[in-house]
Image 1 (cartoon, rainbow, N blue to C red):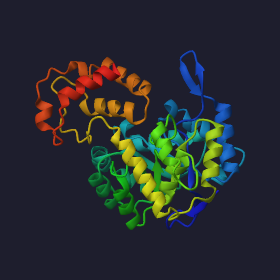
Image 2 (cartoon, one colour):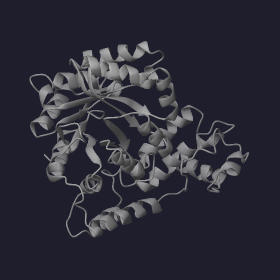
Image 3 (cartoon, rainbow, N blue to C red):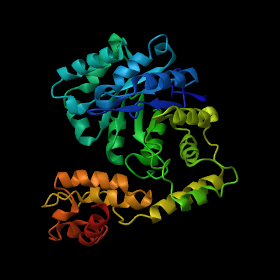
Amino acid sequence: MRNKEFGNLGFKTSVFGMGCMRLPQIKTADGHKIDEAEAIKMIRYAIDHGVSYIDTAYDYHNGKSEVVVGKALKDGYREKTKLTTKLPPWHVETREDFGRLLDEQLARLEVDYLDFYLLHALNAERWKRLKELNVLGFMEEMVKVGKIKHIGFSFHDELSAFKEIIDDCNWDLCQIQLNFLDGKIQAGVEGLRYAGSKGIPVVIMEPLKGGKLAQNIPDDVLALWDQAAEKRSPVEWAFRWLYNFPEIAVILSGVSNMEQLKDNIRIFADAQPNVMTAKEIKLVRKVKELYESKTKVPCTGCEYCIPCPQGVAIPRVFTLYNNAFIYDNKEEPAQNYKRLSEKEQDASHCVQCGACEQACPQSIQIIKQLKEAHKVLA
């Protein structure tokens, strides 16, 4: 397993980090639950094969991920890895909640300290509220008493908010969503490089865009990948594009079965920065352009069109509509669209008032496109 210096913190971690948001599950009468025995087996297998960064969070698997991770790290495995979990801002009402949540997480994990404690899924609004509650003072105090070794945040918002958060604190790491299709979304490549310029190690989440770059690959995309002189799977190409960036410290991947885990360990055996040739970079760009050509609506998600007077979740509808064609899979978008319908946020509630079209900076024919989206997704 390829290891890399984690910024200037004085230790190395594996470039591949095991994310524990998508652990293997088994069916129950009430739905699904973690297949605890298999999950523990996988986490220990990963550590035995050189994976030294484990990532979980308070709400993953309805609060059970931390419990299972804690069990997996018994019998000497805790000492072999850097353990990360996250403080959930949506469960915070008062400053006292910080300590309550952290102690609950330490108890779930059955550990005395965390290597990394992140503020989970920060955006501009959450960051403002947490600062008002002096979250940084709390985290610094926890570092002093030894419950936390290093502090950071994960992020979902616009680039400007990311830069503001980066500049507000001496962070030990940040975690961003990035893959070759999302280079200009959220923090994006520019945010990655901005953090790198500040000496802040960057951990990557959603490297496969929730599995969309790994499963149900359209035939024309596969044909493009097959043009490469050295044959690699779509998964390996997606990871390779990421670890090519020297600013990246760890790439998280949430694995759901042992086969995926073993494949990731193989891919990251020699994950080096700056390894991609000009031809390879050009090939990834062509694949990206092909995916983008399948887009039905050129919606950027700027949200100028909302709130809709009738409650239609316009950007969300277009995302689902686009995904049905980009990834050649209509089943999952249709299921998510059904959930919008249950909330009365689907396109059938459009009354063609035109307010959205007047506000759209892309001049999209929103009314027409909503009708088309509804035909496909309903």
